[in-house]
Length: 107
Figure (tube, rainbow, N blue to C red):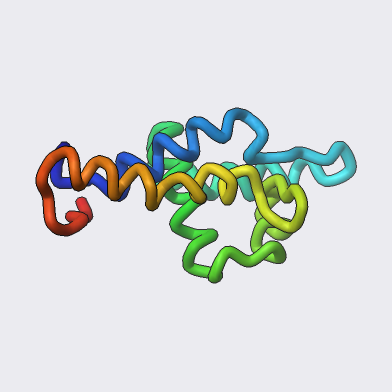
């Protein structure tokens, strides 16, 4: 595994969450579109935007309020990404064990 193990696994988990990460209510479509575009700052691709979504959400201690403000889907008080993120630690530990690495190395 490369020097970006944590980010790679996070992106994989976010992609596995599917297309249900964002929502766009008809009465607030312009606001939702603007919020979603904020994750693509710097003209980044979809994978980096998903990493930005997860990291931004993590910085708020996984706040449901942050999800509402950014039009990120919330189900049972957690966005689909939290269900995917539940598997991140297990995947990271498995990858680290498989590669014989002792620590996670960020990009």
